[in-house]
Image (cartoon, rainbow, N blue to C red; front, side):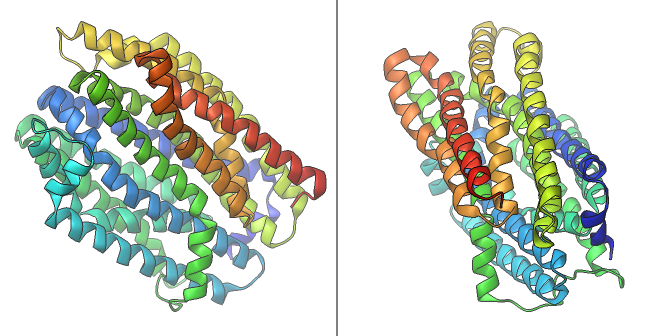
Amino acid sequence: MKENILGTESVSKLFLQYSIPTIAAMLFLGLNTIVDGLFVGHYIGADALAAVNIAMPFSSFLFALSVVIGIGAQSMIGRKLGAGHAGEANTAFTTAVVLAGSISLLFAAVAVAFPQPIAYALGANEHLMPQVAAYIRCLGLFLPFLAMMMVFDYVLKTMAMPVYAMLALVVAISSHMLLNWLFLAKLSLGITGAALAAGISYCIACCMAALPFFYKKAGLRPFAGSFDKQAAGHILYSGSSEGLSELGTGITTFLFNITLMRYVGEMGVAAFTVISYLAFIGNNVLIGLSDGVGAIISYNYGSRQMERVKKALQLVAAAAIVIGIGFFIAIFVFSKEVIALFFNDGNEELLAFAVYGAKLYAFAFLVNGLNIVTAGYFTAIGSPKKAVLIALNKGIIWIAIGIVVLPLLFGIHGIWLTVPIAEIVTVVLSGFLLHSQFKHKFV
């Protein structure tokens, strides 16, 4: 089977074969977010940009659950295939598909039936409420495709198909950009057009990612196994750290929106929206790096080839440091030029506010790659408790504490320092957990 190259090919070669396509796909996804923001900001306005950002945590929660299922399935399937248990791998796949499908249908029903209460709960004021609710209602129709897309994407990597997974995402994102141009620039469909463009791109990505699993020679099939409650528990448990990281993104956005509305108003939310786009690109690249080696680590852990696991971990950690420093420098040098693209002329105060915030936020990139990689490593080897601890600290605990305490101490500047401080505190924890792992037993 194709999966065997994960246990026999050079680790350095596998690292490049898996990490480069995954990073490229995630980078393209980040660029798509920026292009999406450019279209919304220029063709609908700054209020629409803020509305999309306020609505984002709702889909982020489903995205987080989908990542939980996808990563958990990838970890479990990789270890089962490495151990030669193909039947159990198929059962894990079927279980993951049923889980993702059921949860996403529930999210879709809630989004369509209750968009106004959701918008209110996410912090929308009366001025932004109509646009936030309209975006949530329309996007809700497509949420099942988002969930299934993520599950298929992660499982494709266990089939030694990282390039195809990248291709599916690239085609979908290209379609999203074209649809943004059509719906916003040409047809002037407003916030509904923005949601339609995103939703249709989810459909395209889901269909492309699903195709390889229906070929006759496919080693894994979505319905070849049966739903297994025990496997479901293992999947959710194994992927919980990655899901908490994604959930942390939604919580961070929610807390920042609420705090900025209190201290600054709509201008603050618009500025943070653009900063979050820049952060999304950097985080996506680092997540792509970690995800790219996840299948390598889980497969070799399953086949008990520990030196290969160690080699993969060393390579991904070194790459995370280099990439993080690169993003830190890039934001300091080019943030003004990039952020200016999102706003029309006459928004100099907003531009200056966003640029200053971006430069403070950039310090997070010096260490957050190590936190992402460490959590991904523990997830891949089936040790999710440590991964969950990292995810809770970096994405929820210290963010919640910082967003309350730091503005009281440093004013608005404290808001921008919240994420860097949370990452710095967490990297100490990550180092301690890895040290303990190596000190007592490598795996």
